[in-house]
Length: 239
Image (tube, rainbow, N blue to C red; front, side, top):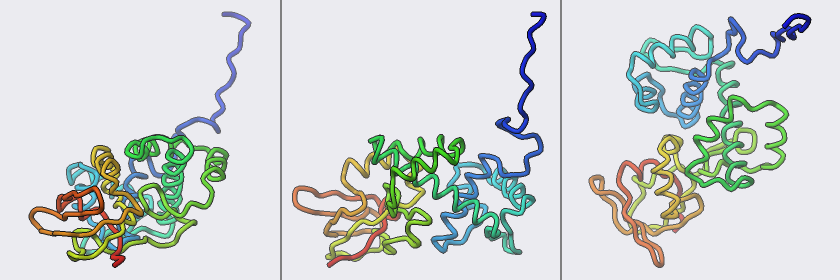
């Protein structure tokens, strides 16, 4: 229509900047996973990343190379991956944002426990600093996400260093946290919550088998947890 002028595009506010050297959303996911493994003191190799992300090794190789080119990670001669100072800072900020969002979705929005991880993934990349600050104020200084993993800046270390799979029979076991790998499986998280296998729950270990799992008991409840699931539950012996 003549006489009507369209407003000029504001390039500074475009969602995707052409030639932006920063990590892509997918690369950010990899940085988070590398961070999770690194702060737990576990070696980070491409095969481990492939299993976690559920992709083929060539996909991991491609993204790892991109992160290396952007100076977010380093690889040694054995292929072990470490975060650079810049990569660590960025990953830690993303993990903090993710876990604060999970806390907000559970405590304020009352979203079911097993849904919060995926919702946080959807929200974290689009969260503005103003919204992040507001959500943080609502969450307060909560030390952990709902799954018991520390929120960087609020808690400096992981609580519970003993895997349920390694705990000895005859002791009481207090669940402290669920490993991040479990959060990728919403059905598993739903199962854990429905059986009250959540942080702060206390069970007596009545039986344990590397082949068949760990049997937990408390008044009114007895449950056997498969070995693969027990390996994702961490806590401490309390008696």
